[in-house]
Image (cartoon, rainbow, N blue to C red):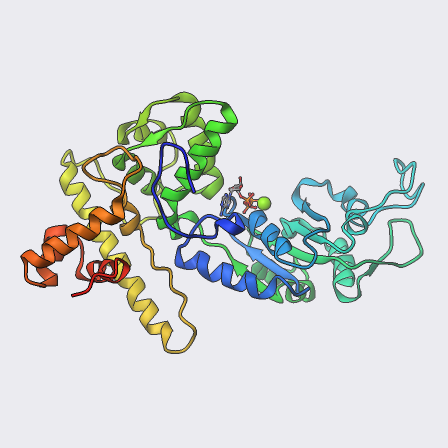
Length: 384
Ligand SMILES: Nc1ncnc2c1ncn2[C@@H]1O[C@H](COP(=O)(O)OP(=O)(O)OP(=O)(O)O)[C@@H](O)[C@H]1O
Ligand SMILES: [Mg+2]
């Protein structure tokens, strides 16, 4: 994927879809999207700010038969309340003071295509009625008009507010809510997909260098750990902006842990992660705790997979943050291209020979779990 200085070789992903990430949660989202994209069913995408709602809405459009038609994202929260109906549905000449000419709305412009109604929670109640009608039979009237206009538009809605609660409070129409959420997608926060963070860092470092015409940053292992360990409340957008800022401020430098800490110091630090490390002074101890936590997280995922695999089709994301970090060469510190796979295979074969096939001892010496060793043995096709 990357031809730049940083090459973490994360293997196949959704590159063909322009989507970063192979965490289990993203796997599930992509699986659903592939199923529903070719239909006209409406979709409600929920997720915190900056989690990629627009990216995924666009993906639904790109994977549908409408892909050659328009995709129009509209931020309902950014349009003044008095103008929203005329923006969405258009208006006739003279329908209100400043309407000197008749104008098509987004729904007419997007005919045969897809509309994303972002921040749908901000849509005023009267407009909600009109939208429901479009959803039910594809018709509406321009503001000040008297004839029905028919369109064929696929509607995707997105929200970072809890619409169900708004329904309870009476600020969002229940019928519209149920009509919109024919299919619901919930995008995970960045905190719930830590294993994807190194890959985002790589992508954003590359893009940012191109955008700002600077040389691409290199990150050492400790810097990546610091980034992974930050709460990123603004999710992917915040991470992207952060890498942008680093690219400009630290051009051409190797980013180490203390540099990341320096810039993150001013940011709010109420971590949602299981642990926020204090500076212990003992880097080794810190590393050990981190690895142990990752092991626990991976084991929980394994149990979850086992529990769910009996009933439904198993969604396997054979990738973990543990692996992501293992791919960062601990000896070399700087992330540079290397033939990690071959070296690892040789190391495993040598150790298995040394310990006469004893996996526990081999795993111990490699400082990984037996389960991870087993996965690597399978991955490299090592015959025992
Ligand atoms: N999977 C991804 N791969 C690459 N870039 C991504 C991905 N997801 C999100 N981004 C980037 O992160 C930023 C935020 O994404 P997006 O605008 O889709 O979020 P959002 O959920 O719509 O946010 P908001 O709620 O604030 O509207 C964008 O710059 C987008 O390009
Ligand atoms: Mg958005």
